[in-house]
Image (cartoon, chains in turn brown, purple):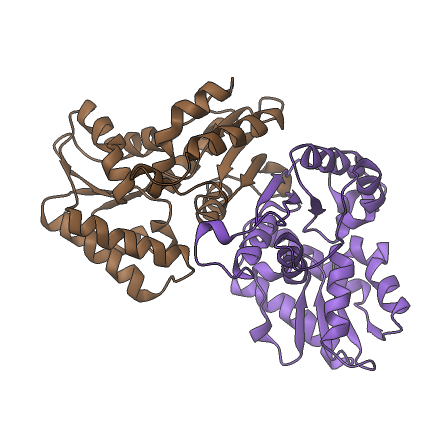
Length: 236
Length: 236
């Protein structure tokens, strides 16, 4: 179809989360043969400086590397860009200054999906990493929508980070999954009626069947929107 | 590390096989954090004309589309290129004419791995698709190495193709896996001591634990070589 668009994926944060995101695009696509699928150009670049470190004022600025990838993807033919990493959206303005095609935010898509899938008074439990928490991207988007939010404590965020580091090192054991699930359960105990898994490492070990409440993964939210945009069904 | 190389992946044939190949690169990499991983640039382009049709003299020439992707990947910064699709290697010369960086063949890597992992008189059972079979790429490489080969019959190739089409449509059921396994068992009955799974769709449903003989997947053979080349351990 001539209306189909090519998605450019700013990847590598982490590399397995990017591969997981690509898988979820394939799963979300109604396809019976290769040619029905979405065209993707992916730079899976794990050498981008640490985003968590940058949020603490340490290390190199990842915005420069991220914007350079965005530029290369546009040059390579991408019609719109996405980035399956929540924290990296702190550098969204660096990306948008570097390109002339649309950039579709994972934060916007996840919040939109969460709002659609729950009633107005349902508190949203926000599962995320310390860097993404302190950036406040989700808190701001949910506050603008007037939606109550249940946040993690500093201790919970710190436990989350150590579990995310284990996933990034290749440890996807039951212990890691159960650790994250327990953190999610704390949010539910404190009143969360819907959870946003706002780190693309989480769905590598968690899935919605583990929860009684609605469980939105940012990876899936962005994957579904990507398919709609790429296959011409949705406007930017 | 400054010696690290960027791999360019000519993908989309099929799209899920490309994602599987990327996963196997990650699995084959000794990494404890994002930054330890291989840099990849991937064009996952499922709109390349059918290779099976082209082998029957039907449809458009896929070589033009494949060479164009190779060019874009080189321009985007790839230091070497790979293509996780066996049949598409028929158009290898189109790729090599279009680029100035090395192209690493999945056929060469799979044959090399099979030869290393078995003794000289061990017959290799070749599991592949009708197009790849009639192109004779594996048969030629194995004949040059003086290695006996057990080939599939026309009926077996035709059954293989229908199972591959089911995988491409998203059907990764036990029935499909068992169908392919039965075809592999026929090769073993006829004397194969080692199997080469020479289609990147096969490892989406088959794995080595299903077989008593050595089971080489072309996807893994290429993934392992890619990691060695990208992380500077191997020369081209």
